[in-house]
Length: 339
Ligand code: SF4
Ligand code: SF4
Ligand code: SF4
Image (cartoon, rainbow, N blue to C red; front, side):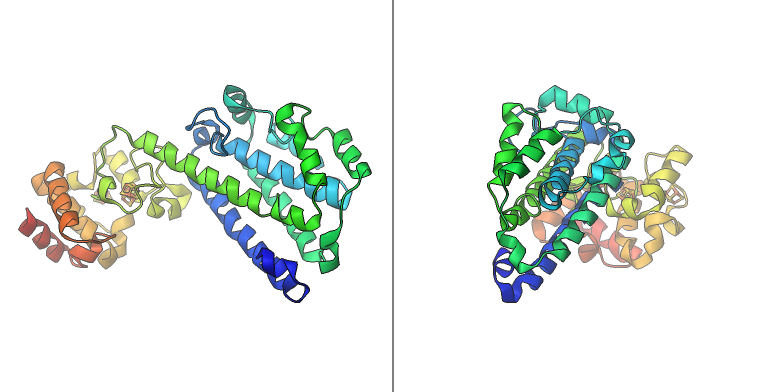
């Protein structure tokens, strides 16, 4: 992408690729916002430190898009930041700075104060605005440099803390030309922080799962699930099962139904064999999972886990459907044969 942007003949192609990359990364951010509970946004699962993942999810979003807003508007366009459209009040932030000066518990306390939904809307508005700038750039703009007056304007705006951990940012940005800013912060900064957010959310899921029953309500085993690194189990608030996240309000109908009936899982239900609810409504696609729930009904969870261990040792597969097939009876027969 950077190579394409560096040549006049491929400049437009490079910018389009950059916009596509930003779109893909923003989708990952949207998915985190949609699937993670409010409490997740002020956790510091990797503790204090210098790395990008020594942060909260809320701070990561704040930092990434405050920097982008400042660089896009105050430094490059010389106009008002998106932030000035009353976003501080909407987000309920006590700060206007980039947040580089925050660490550990101070960062956690800051994150607790933020309205994450409003923060997400701000992030989207900033992204859209920067995308407009990127689309309007001409190849000749890439060499544009910044002056002492640009630096003074950034200092006067007080959007960068004067602490040692933050003040270097102004010299860093002003030492670049527009092409350099396209790398940092408009692309590489995104990659770094979205990757850090991915690590933070996965760690939160793993922490949440500790000591929790690994058999899901539908009969799946979290320990043997190909999503296990990313999902905190449907028995915790960190449930990011793709079926649940695509369900209305992000709630899996099977877990909701079990809760309503006071059941540990569908394997305790008399209607299991013919049930058409939620995950089981997918028929042939999930009959293998229904077969596992029926197997639990007959032999218990421990037996299913033993059988799954054997199956995974014998065969290399991702989804249990690949081994148990599309029919309930076939699935049950295979499980029984291995037992
Ligand atoms: S489909 Fe529902 S019950 Fe099954 S693993 Fe996903 S969230 Fe849990
Ligand atoms: S997707 Fe379902 S089975 Fe897989 S880890 Fe999440 S809750 Fe467990
Ligand atoms: S009715 Fe269906 S979804 Fe509800 S507990 Fe029974 S098997 Fe599960």
